[in-house]
Image (cartoon, rainbow, N blue to C red; front, side, top):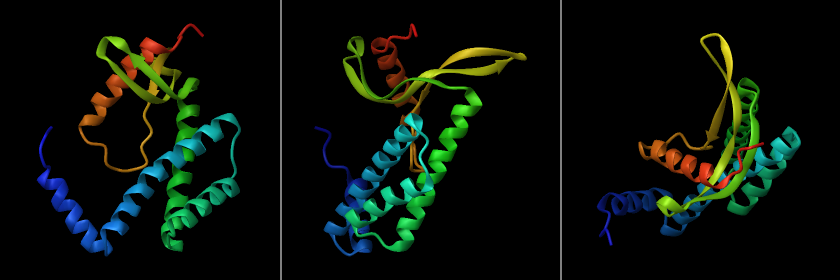
Length: 169
């Protein structure tokens, strides 16, 4: 029982006024969360078998229709999703990432926490000119905002992953 968040209440009031109604704001908030989920799903499909720009376009068209988005917003969403896919492909290549787990719920009983892990695996980095295997936990974000809490969130995900996943692969 934290009480009322005045900042959030003010943001919501201003945002609803800018968007024309509380319903429009709620629809926008839902669409941003669903867009992040959509990009996660596209990345997962791409890891299993590389997807084409037509498959991205099809997914974005379905998303556009669901939320009645304008063509411009859908176009920007397609660009954002494509950038995310290409960035992730580059990340896999750059670190020679061997993915152990994607989108898996992991639990660390010692901290009484369960959380989904986006990407967990082993990759390669160069240290003092020598290649070295390292554990990689990737937390995918589709928004530019990831506050200071993000590092702590990743630390919790890492603990949960170590407690849950079999790393003797």
